[in-house]
Length: 393
Image 1 (spheres, rainbow, N blue to C red):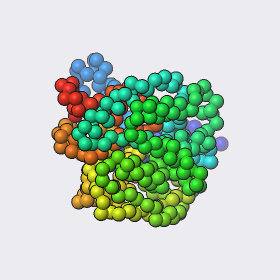
Image 2 (image 1 turned 180 degrees about the vertical axis):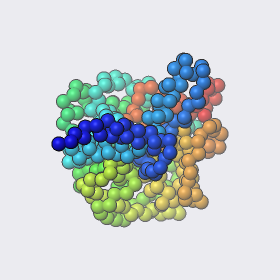
Image 3 (image 1 turned 135 degrees about the horizontal axis):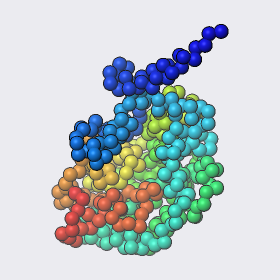
């Protein structure tokens, strides 16, 4: 019987060199991976960079993002992990498969389970925010702190058991302490975490099975409470919203399947085509006062802004996304675009608003003033007090 062992070495070499050939010649077009990737440029070789090691580091970073068939190999790796072990190939980096197939962001589980020691005192934060509220009120601007929940904080029962055997402190302790501290200073609060826990008992899902953020229904309940708070604080009546209907299907779209998409599988599991509520809303007394509003916060705001925009609640709605990019909605602008915030005309861009809303997700509750609103709050107070301190924008 002939031996064909001699075939293995050249076959192995072919397998190893195919990705390199793809990198050089690009003979096959690949589908891009889902998710944010920061492309690294191919480094230029220089005598200095070679001998100080800078070139090697830059080349490694570029090659790791550019080698041939990268997306296909990553998808294959992820598919093997999921098909054999019901685990995400991104498990170590961010996506956790929970009980009954619920997907979670790992950092959100870590935050809710509070593996790190809790913050002992938020009093300096609440006093700082109280000062901001008072100074804004003197300018005729209402200030509201909006607390948004996370999926583990609303559905902790789906967190995998292995995360409950680790040492952790009291779950969600920071949230409870933070809320108590804000209330002690009489700061205007809309507590989305508390509202959604109450609504959870009504039976409709408030977070999608395959998504990171709340669904449209979860966002609606918080938007409704936010508008009630704004109406309470305003001298003029503000239009409210009502829920006309809820329909359900098994066709999640967009943010309702963002974690499923980020798993980057060849074959997406059918069970993530789960019950998805779709809402229809309407405004009540739409001829009422329409204020100008500035929201500063993160990605949980997109659903809120969509609800407000579709019902034309505000005359102008500006969103500072992590205080890095600006998004403006108005009656005339249906499809806004992000604009990088390089500088601000504070009188025009901030202090001409009727409401400033600071959205703080449970993940970003902090005892560091400089981190509040990604630096927005400390800049805001500096401008309110005519401070000459340097600001981010």
